[in-house]
Structures are given as C-alpha cells and as structure tokens.
Amino acid sequence: MSDFVMTIGGDSVPAAESFGVINPANGDVFAHAPECTRQQLDAAFDSAAKAQRDWKLDEDVRRQVLLKIADVLMASAEELAPVLTAEQGKPLADATMEVFASAIWCQYFANLETPPQVIQDDDTARVEVVRRPVGVVAAITPWNYPLLLTFWKVAPALLAGNTLVLKPSPYTPLTTLKVSELIRDVAPAGVVNTVSGGDRLGAWMTGHPVPRKISFTGSIETGKLVAQSAAPDLKRVTLELGGNDPAIVLDDADPAQVSKAIFAGAFTNNGQVCSAIKRVYVPEALYGAVLEGLTEQASAIKVGDGSQADSKLGPINNAPQFERVKELVADALAHGARATTGGKAMDRPGYFFEPTILTDISDGTRTVDEEQFGPALPVIPYRDIDDVVERANSTHFGLSGSVWGADGDRAAAVAGRLECGTAWVNTHLALGPSQPFGGVKWSGIGSENGPWGLAEFTEVQAVHRSKDPSGLNASTAGLVS
Ligand code: NAD
Image (cartoon, rainbow, N blue to C red; front, side):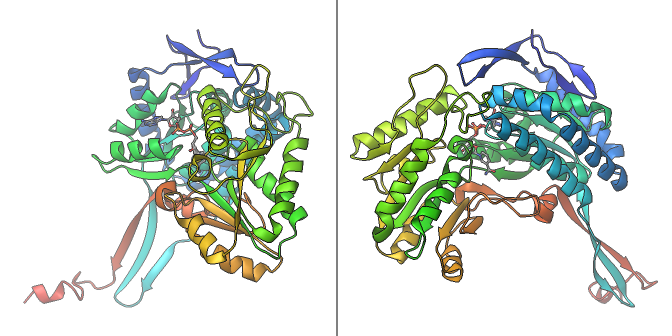
C-alpha cells in the first residue's frame, strides 16, 4: 500500500499497486508511491477535460488561484522540503529554495500582463490576435528539480486556461503528489490532476487521445519518443531536453574568480542540471591556474546526506545515473585523463560520487562529448578562439553556454556565436521566470518561462471583425459580380 495518494478530479486516489521510492543518501526504500492504472489515467484526463470547460472562462479567477497556490507553497515549505531531500538527495536548504522558487513562478505568471494585440483598426476592420488555451496538457517531468520544473509548466498552463495531468519521475514522485494534495482546497477539482508511475505511464499519456499538448522535460532519448508519440494526432509539444553546456574562459579572465563561479555553474545540484556547465575550455596561459582553482573548490566542498545541515552536495539521485557517472569517469581515466581530485564513488552507502575534476582530456572522450549529468567536470585547454567556438558548437546539444572574461563586450561577442538557447556572459545558470529558457538542436523544441513560455500553452486566433456592412473585403469582393 502506498503512503502517498494521487489527485484525480479533486479526490485522493490510492492505487492497488505501488512502487518503492529510494532515498539516494542510503539506497533504502523509504516510501511507496501509487502505480497509476490505465483506467485511473483515463479518469484523470476525463476530469481535466471537464474542468477545463469552466476554467478557461475567467482569467481573473485563474490569477487568484495561482496566487493562492503560491501561498500554499510558501506556507508548506517546511513540510515539503524534507520530502524533496529524501527522494531527490539535494541539501535541505536547496530543497527549501526549490519550494520557494516554485511559488515565485506562480506569482510571476499570476501577474503577467497579457495585453490584447490589435493589428488593424480602421474603417474596414478591427483585427485582434487573441490567445486561446490548448485544452488539456500532459506534463511530464524529470528527477533533478521535481517541483520547480513542474511549476514551470503548471503556472503558465493554468494562466492560459488549460487544465493538467502531471506525471513526476518515478524516482521523485512524492513532492509533486504531496503538493497536489495541498492545493486541492485552492484549485477547482480537476484543474490539476497528478498521477504517478513508471516510464510506461508517460508513454500512455503521450499517446492518449485527450491531451492536446505535451509539455515534457527529460532526456533527449525520451524526448524523441514523445515527439513520435504526439505526431499521429498532432499534439503540440514543448520539449526541454538535455544539454552539454560549454564554458569558454577568455585570456583576460581572472582565474581565481572564474574558477569559483564556474565550479558553482557546474556542481550546483551535484551537476544534475540540464544547463549546468559540463565542459570547460581554458586558454593555455590560464589553464594551470583555472585547473588549480577548480580542484581546490571540488576538494573542499562538503558532500553528505542532504538532511544534514553542513552538506553542500548530496548524492546522485538514482542507481542508473550513479552507474553512468562511474562509467563515464572510468572511461575518461582509461583513455588517459587524470582526476586532479575525486575520480571514484565514495566508500559509503548511497549513491555518492567524489566531486571530480578531469584534466589531460579533450573532445572525442565520452565525458566531454556526452551529457554526464553528475559531479565530474572535464577541463580542456585551447589556443585559438575560433577553433574553440567551433568545438563548443560541433555537437547535437544546444541548451546553453557561457563565456568568461574581463572585457564584457568581447565576451558577449563570443557568447553571441554559441549555438544555444541561453548564452551567459560572466555567469552561468542565471535563470528567472521572465527569461525564456529552451534548447536548440537536440536540446529541445520551444521555450519555457516569460511570455514565450506562456505562448506555448496557447493557440493563436485572429479575430477579424469587418466594419463593412456588405461583409465583402478586398480578397473576396472580386468573386461577386
Ligand atoms: P527521462 O527522459 O528518463 O525521464 C523524464 C520523464 O519522462 C520521467 O517522468 C519518465 O518517467 C518519463 N518517461 C520515460 N519514458 C517515457 C516515454 N516513453 N514517454 C513519455 N514519458 C516517458 O529523463 P530523466 O533521467 O528523468 O532526467 C534527466 C534528463 O532530463 C537529462 O538529460 C537532463 O538534461 C534533462 N533535463 C532537461 C531540462 C531542460 O529544461 N532542458 C531540465 C531538467 C532535466
């Protein structure tokens, strides 16, 4: 029997079957989540479709509900953060910040102006472009920021007049299930439905006839399956997928300063961030100093159980990802790379891996070419700026990247040459609800956040109101003799 329940049509819905959720800090199952059946998924989509009929009618109500959801999140941070830490692994302070950030996203969209767009208003016609909701949204999320990435979808989808069925990752379903319970009193029944289960449940959702939109965050591999599954009935898709972000250090950068900031950009959430720095390119003249700075940071940081106050980095979230990081680092070492610090799993229960800095490594090694999504960072020397921009871009990934140097304009000019959705200058991972976020190439389709993210949950409708009593206009008049 599960300790957590699903929310369908405003009701608590248990399931006959459940699956275990592991605390990555010790490898033990600490709770169970419901395994949603096909019938329960049908019920969730059915209640979302019914609820949408009223929900789409009153924008003021929607804004009020979003503000109330934000209040619930803020008031529940102490209850939610330990659950998030237990299922995800991140330190409690970071989990608390994730709950607050989710509330901030709701507040931002509750207050986002959506002015009507009048593109013509003269003697012949008034033409307005309006945005209509897409309908029911299927939202599927990964395990690295289970709550925040859920609200990147929930907040704009609700403002636009859609209703949702949410499916969190099977590794981190609990916080999303809990939040859905907590907001039952403030969101009308059926507006936010939450189901839990394995990958199979995600596939059922994308192939289901009710949702008109799939908002997906996860791996490139799954994103391609989602696109295929959405194609037969032309569901709209937003795909936020993986990245392999380069950080390019320029020759006028301050090595001590940039190594601190680059370390933070690479190791936040233990490297499990889609847009974390995943490879660093440093000019030969600065290479030794930057490598030393990064090594110092990585060897000093306190790794431990996220529930303990002094832990700055937690474990890797799950066993397959732990195995993947081990495999990629072992592959790098086998191909001549050297770990200046770290390089192996920690000798303790749970999925802990030593923060690792890799040198004597270059493009063509798996850890450089693939998304490692963990606490291991390759640092690569370069000579020529054009060549390094070419190397940064010669990949299927295109999520984000950063360029670092004392001359901000020069760094910005290099950043402008990166083929990616976000180009940072002298910072990395600076994100906010008003700033569009999305990937190019295989890193995704579409954007989240800001008016651009809101638009993804809408369909454009042109309302052309004729002022000519005949009803004829320039393009049709010639047809009538
Ligand atoms: P994943 O693709 O394995 O799973 C993501 C979600 O998809 C889970 O809920 C999973 O159950 C579900 N799923 C699995 N198979 C499915 C299918 N066939 N159809 C529908 N849904 C299915 O990804 P993950 O391992 O949970 O997350 C890590 C990946 O997510 C990394 O590649 C990371 O870069 C990416 N990510 C991207 C962003 C972004 O905004 N671009 C943000 C966070 C994470």
